[in-house]
Each structure stands twice: as structure tokens, then as C-alpha cells.
Amino acid sequence: MKLAILVVTYNRKELLMENISAIASQSYGDFDFYICDNASTDGTADAVKLRAEKDSRIKYYNTGSNLGGAGGFAFGLNIVLQEDYDYCWIMDDDSIPEPDSLEKLMKTAEIIGKDNFSFLANYVVWTDGQPCKMNICMPLREQNEFEKENGIVPINRCSFVGCFINADAARKVGLPFKEFFIYGDDVEYTLRLNSYKKSYMVEKSVIVHKMPSNVRIGIAEAPAERIERYGYEYRNRIYYTRRYFKDSWARIIYKYIKECAKVILRSKDNRIKRLKMIIGGFKNGIKFNPEILFPEQKW
Image 1 (cartoon, one colour):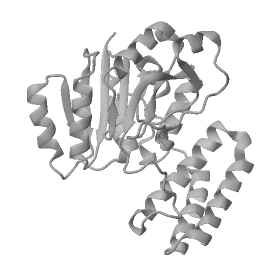
Image 2: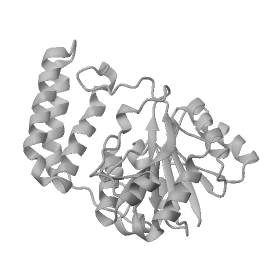
Image 3: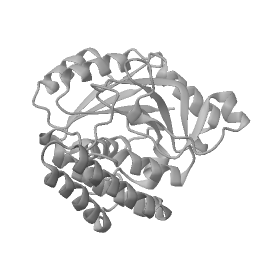
Image 4: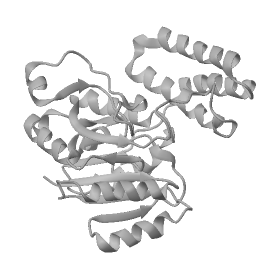
């Protein structure tokens, strides 16, 4: 089986170097390693090229501008899926896989059978070994005996902190939406893959997500300079709710009202701007309709 690994990075050189070291030392070492750099300005390019001189598996690409996480993964997968890879393991630059993480994914893929799944997710923990709150995969149902025996949990979505994609499935469903920029691109894309074939989390294939803290910061608490980023989250969430959870509108409207209430009650500044991001994201999400692109299409 032919394997590619894809990491997207932006101005996190030190974390990326740790990620590269963790991937380079995997117990399963037969892969090509693609690094897509969203035009970092912190010396990332020089650092990666230096590592590539010592490791021929590393292939460096610069996107030319900051495309966001969504655009970076679309850019990278567009390259990978035009080659004859069977699988592509994707992750963010602050993802540090355990030494046997990839080996366990490959063994699980063999047990399940390549034709029987669209993606496998890693079990993601924070630096203290506790489950990472941003990356928890919720089971779809109780495990059957085969799943229990092999340590796999049926899921319908995961984050891009460790997503092992069946390349054939990805070629069928297309690329992630570059228009998402950030937030929710991984949710939408893995839901899309799952709508094609089943997907699972592999309990013993572990990745450490080196976030600054194991807390999800919402718009009510976000620093002023990051408020505008949340417009993408609220827009993108409406899009994938429309597409995959048509019966969830009451719940989503309640959530947005609750988010507005949190801003009014908790935020210490920029309340109007924060509320505009929530309400504007809701409105934009109703009409937001990006086109699914496939490898080799102009994008």
C-alpha cells in the first residue's frame, strides 16, 4: 500500500519541527511526507528544506499566500490525490503522533479492508494525556463485537488532528472546501467522506495535540484581535448543518441564541462586534454554497 502524509503549517516553525521529528521516527516508515506551508514568515521554509536534505521523504510546497487551514489541506490533497497513493494521513502542525501511531492505523486499515471505510481517526489527547476537548470523536452507536475486538469506534466525523483518509474515497467525494478558510472544514469533509463509506476512530493510535491549553475558547472570551475569525465558524457551521443535519435547525438556532447570550453576559469588550460575527455568520451560512472541486480541476 502506498502512503502519503500531509501536514499544513503556518508560522509555527518550532511545533512543525517537533511534528516532523515525530513523523520521521514512526515505527512504520514507508511513506512520502508532504508539507504545505501557508506562506509562513518565521523561517519555516528554510527549516523544512534543511530537514529535507537529510530525509528524502519530505516534499515541501509553499501555497504562495495564507489559504487558512481549509485552503492548505485542499491545496495539499489536490497534489496527493493526483498520485497513486492508497492512503493519506493528514494533520495540523501542532499534532505530535506517538511512535507507533501510524503502524496501528495501517494494521487497522488492513483488518477492516480498504474497500470498507472512508477514513480512520486518531485518538487525540492533550499534553497531560487527557482527551483533547477540541478533538473528541463522538461514537455513532455501540460497538459491535468485531469493533470491540479491534479497538475501533464507529464515528461520522473527526478533526484534522490525525485523519487517515482512504484516497479512493477522497477522489470520489472531492477536496475540502478551501472557502471555509478556518473552522469546520474538517467536520464538513469527514461528514462528506462518511456519507460515502463508514469511518472509525482507532483507540490505540494516539496523537498529542499541543494546544496552549485544553480549553476551547469561544467568541465570548476570545481576545479582540481574533474576533473576526469566528465569522467563519458561524457561517461554516450553518452550511454543514444545512447539508447533513436537516433535522437540527431548532438545536442550532438555540445554540446561536445561547452564544449571543454568553457574549452579552460574559464579554468584557467589543460586545457589538462579537454579536455581529454570530448573526452575520448565521445569515451568510444560509446562502453560502461553495462548489466541490476534484483533483486536477482548476481551483
